[in-house]
Amino acid sequence: MYRSNKKMLSISTCVLCATVLFGCSKGTETTNTTASTTAPAATSAATAAAKETKAPDAAKKTITITYRDDGTGENGTLYKWFKDAAASYPNKDVIIKQTPIQASEGDYFAKIALALKSKDTAPDIVTEDTFMLNSDASAGLLSPLDDKVKSWADWTNGSFIEAMKKGVTAADGKIYGVPYNTDSRGLWYNKQIFKQAGLPEDWKPKTWDEVLSAARTIKEKAAKDVVPFWMNMGKATGEATSMQTYEMLLYGTGERLYDDATSKWTVKSQGIMDALSFVDTINKEKLGPPLSKVLNGQAGNSSAREYLPKGKLGISLDGSWIAGNYLPNGAAPWPEYKDVLGFAPMPTSKGQAPGSITLAGGWALSVPANAQHKDEAWDFIKYALNKENTQKLVIASGNITVRADVAKDPGYTQMPFNAIATDYLKNAEFRPARDKYPEVSTQIQAMVESVATGTSPADAMKKYQQDVTRIVGEDKVSVK
Image (cartoon, rainbow, N blue to C red; front, side, top):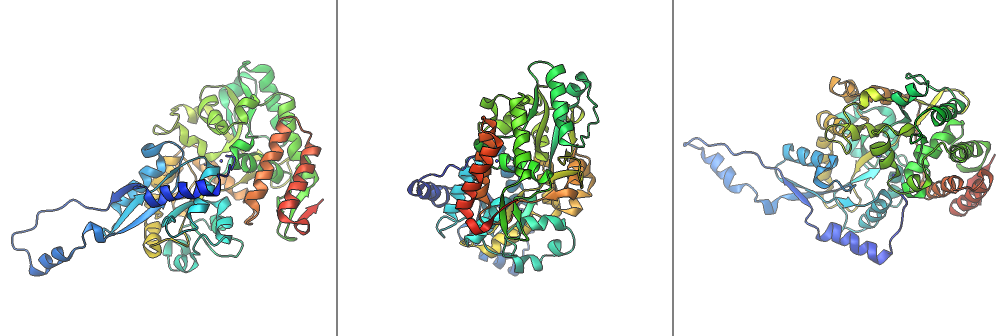
């Protein structure tokens, strides 16, 4: 979903880009029309009058939907899903117009933030990564949906997994989106490589030492071109480095980025040192991929779409969604993946309770504060995210569902790894719902990359302490 360095464009360039994308682009329209039927000869006067007064296309309302296109265009899962939902949408007086942005995640967030500031460029529906949702809500760019969801039966009758609602609830306690997928993280591993190295094919490590031991064994006993362990470690992979690597490690020590009890960010602690030391060990012992591979923006795709399918990667700390790559319509079809791969829980550092850890994220559909057709946008969101349409999306994308009813459906549970990945959510943690989190996350990425390239964990933590203190203020940080 699955994550890049947030390179900011100049304000004038971004505004122009956003204007072109949202104000001038024709986008992709899907008109809601149904096949005509032949009317009997004796048509009633009332029916005839109704036909004559039917609004022409020009009078219909156009609902624009903006999301990130990762380069797949009309072959993309979201494109196909929105097109399908629009075609079957009962309200034929609404035209659904897709206005995707082809960009890295960081650039997408920057362009969206600019576009949402103006009524001229804001779409009616926008996809929000839940880690950015609070920041955009705090900036006044999104509409709260509390009144809407309260009257929506699916939201109140248990159809949605209750814990998943936390991801779309901002610091002010209000709801700013409806989630359409979530994810969990763990250790993907190649059973064939494990067998060759004499490791158990049903692998469930209990501590970080056991993870490192398996990686060392693979380095020693597997083929020379096999990378023992892969995790994102660069600024170019953005949130994937923050969440899938650093936070999975930090939270595994029992510590958290932000202390809700004191309302402070932890900037110096043993947990931070332990997390960075794990990264340091992987690189110093050459258990990971070459830095040229892991420090570029395509690192996640390289590990999931190249190294794993080709049998050149032993263990990968990554998200549940990567299995979507291997489906027949995925980016790297691999029919044998369900038999070759295993998905083990990421253990806590020393095996302490709860034994394993995962970070959950995901994406949501939100209504911008400057949207032109808020009521119509909300109605389409409800339809697009009903049980049937949600199930179609998560099965096509390989993501985990946020709906409890879909999670019980055989069509969902029969998908390889879905049941395991969903089970990991019982120990799920979420990123802090604080407006400063995106800025802190950028410093996390810089800190991890500095350790990967040779800076000592102690020096990297010291720099992180200075940078986060500058961002949030001296009174908002704590040292343990």
